[in-house]
Length: 493
Ligand code: GLN
Image (tube, rainbow, N blue to C red; front, side, top):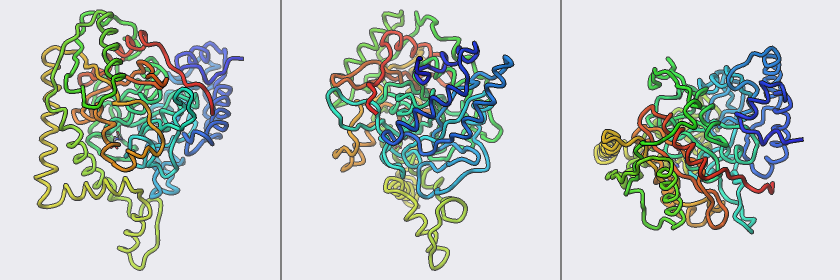
């Protein structure tokens, strides 16, 4: 019998609709795979066995009548940042211990309305702050990929490390994720999966635990470009509960797959060639350029001159917003409460015990850059830089460029507890060097697996698009996927 967990969403959809398989069987196959693998990979922080089986049974009823939504019976994993009614929602933080919301995020509501089945909640960096999934209160997630001939455990990237690891290791058919500075695209690149971060405003942020509200955006991690298109179609919507969500029809993203990219202009930004970048990344980028050219696209050199300021500006704007968003965790309203001698003492003790090191670092940086006397020098300056970064992109698109091709990450997956990164948080921050600009400008970006490095680890390429032009990303991303082929880890877990 074929292993049902190996089916992509589009393949499973066919078989479910054709009544070749049942949603119940598919869900049971995933639950069994999770129960067997999770003690090693630590991708899930909560598995909702009963809920999954009940949802699958409902799907089977609908499917038997020839009914059902776009994702009917498809088992998904949900990043722990999305509020799921009555189910563990802790942003993988100790401070949210025991929090089970009484409401459902708009994105997950959309998925369930389309018939998807929830397998459980996925591990992530605490409050989505990190690039390796090592800041989670629940411990690190392992990457299902290992270097050839090595049994060293590697990080899956972050913050959506559980999403990326579970998709790559066949522990869900697809996963939700969020991206504030690269948290969908970087882990996708490090695990050989596809990650789509749509335009700011494409998906509602309602019911997603806030990190940096002007940058956060929900998206999907999947096994291939088609599945990413299918998931985003269901996730995206305008929402009266999020005034930054945008009222534009959601296109049928799948319909563009396979359309020619002949005549499209693909920009290659010279500033994305950074010092110390491994040759393999440059080689991969050149391969991507050749694939685009072979498919009929015109390659143009472009300049995005403010790129070098993106990371420093991000590490002012994101912590500033985080320090404000995280002020609500005070031991009164949600989760953990550590008793104190009076109310201030209780606040202080709850926050001191509840937040991890990286989250505290961000709160302190954020509070500092927003404080009187420093606000103009840091926060306001960073906002101005942000405008310049956005303008760089606008000028390039106005000059006729349809999409921008870059590497997705500056390296392949690194080891868990990597000494260099542990000693210097800035080294960790550098993982997002190619992805943060996209959030600063509110643009859509997709990471697509494009090859393996000399150690056999996956590497990804990123495509950046115009606002609300996710279709071009799926179209061009599909060309890369067709040329590069698909990559799967060797199972050891
Ligand atoms: N790694 C970046 C950070 O730590 C981005 C995280 C994200 O996109 N959520 O802030």
